[in-house]
Image 1: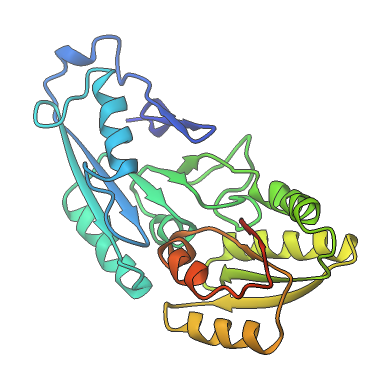
Image 2: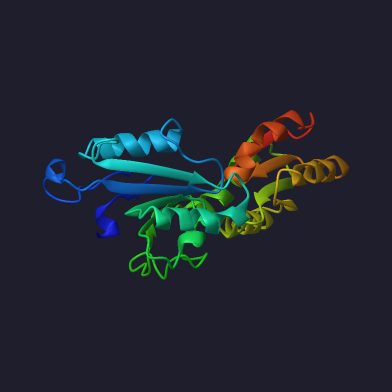
Length: 249
């Protein structure tokens, strides 16, 4: 099976190319796995629902000729190798990965991989190039590293007096770290000082809150991934009345 014939991610929407000219007549049952750094993307989750519905539109129906096996590390990244082994044991025909750590865990295996929300796959070393990715990984390259600095311009419009911005990002995720670095460079170009607040687990957010309380920023920019998104409400609840401008990365 050619992984590029399985699915193509484009602009955040999922489209699926048929395995053959007549998918409905294929007796084979295809096994699709998914791997996330957070909770499994089951069929009732937003990502899982879109994925299954898109496949069904092209003749791959869950329970008929498609089996779906979602796995998630629940933010315990040391579990990823075990989950990859489980998908290999299940003989998955392809795996959709969410997040850079998940894609990295499957890199170099015999499993065809479609990566999603991994940041810049070339910058992180997941693929050799966008034109010729090589290896077993294909997918989508997002432009967040380019767009995130532009969000600072929006923050400046909302808060023209902004001089200092706190940046929250998942420091264990290289893709998100590259986004942070791009945003930090953009901030410097605008004459805005950066308060770097890298987090690696949920408990780190309390330290980040303490740092912001000690040196109050004018705005908060969060580089969005599974870790920061899961803790977004905590950030909003702990925000001070002074920093009014906030933007997800």
